[in-house]
Length: 281
Image (cartoon, rainbow, N blue to C red; front, top):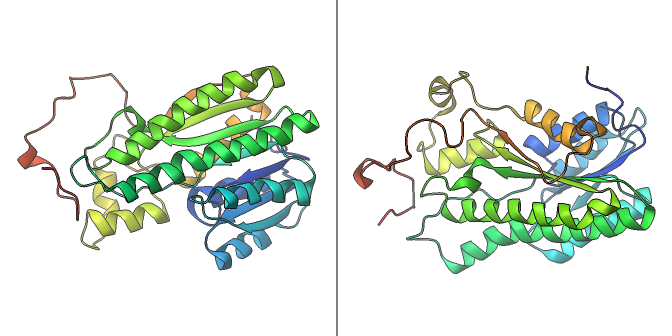
């Protein structure tokens, strides 16, 4: 049975928590007893609303406006945890950029922003969080939300896949570096999820603004896409003592079996699905 007080007295930073998965995780942490949560994101109106929603019942929500592409902004997030809570027990890196691009059309600026948001931001957030945890002797936990795309993925996700592969290796390296401090770092390789952000991406690149969800879910083995609430429970599992000593672990949360079935032979390029603004040649 899940311990509904698994975050009692603990303080957390959850990036990308003004909406979608990040918000679902923040709400679950509060429900399970978190004493304080730093909410981060670019949208101030949403961020303040989420922080206010979390506050009460023993939890304090604090919004810190932050752009994951900016290192100084990331550093302010961890500094805010120290300022408002005096310590930190959990860092969940949920914020991510999921724009489309292939090996043919990705520009240097787009590539750099993808790496800044999906790799550099978690790196420096972890760096400052670890220093704070070690200072206070906290046996902390870091959860990085990565992607099944880190195994290679579709051609239109080329820079995204590269960034998530880098995040996975980074997490293993960090986990090794801090294990003697009893700080754990783990990864969730996330599959296709029904979220506000995914709806925007699907309408922009894949569906000409049309509804897409019902058709997508009909093709899935479980008849649906992942939902933020169930992914939030997985984040909570890895972030809490429920996952014990697990560290440097990769948890694939998807409706597929990597390496199973037939060989991944690509179809002729002419049969690849069209993606708005993305070139395959």
